[in-house]
Image (cartoon, rainbow, N blue to C red; front, side, top):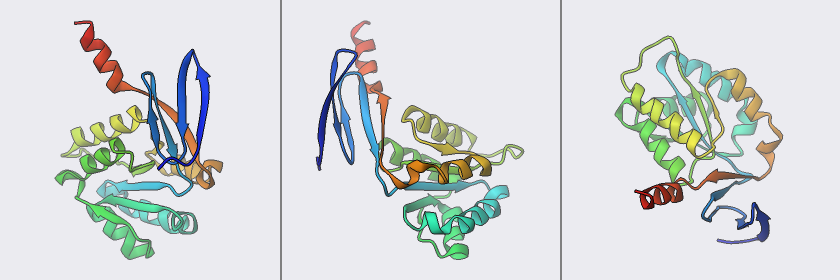
Length: 179
């Protein structure tokens, strides 16, 4: 639902910003991350307790946002912290791909993923795909505690944040037209 329109000129292209969602033009998609963030919480087995401790430490902030996560991680965070966390499948069973799909749909704003760089993962291609899609859609992602601390204490945690993402769909159409 459109609540606010602002029209500006950017490199000669008219772009309309829509608060509380996204708007597409030929060059960019403008996303608005709302005041209430939709945060995905993910951790490899060797990092689950570290993420749970981090969630407990930041519970007063996290309780103001929508939380989701992959299988066991979501369940464990809920059990240990009493935070409501919507669970998807376990990572090796497609949970990372489900989170990635939610990013594409515009339903995840922020990812905290405590990955274990010293342990081989059977679903490593899925993890790489999730990290790639977060990068494509310019989604903030923390892969360790220090980055997560910086992100959770950012001034943007308490306000809306608008950012532009390259309209890759249009780029593909333009490329196909040149073939």
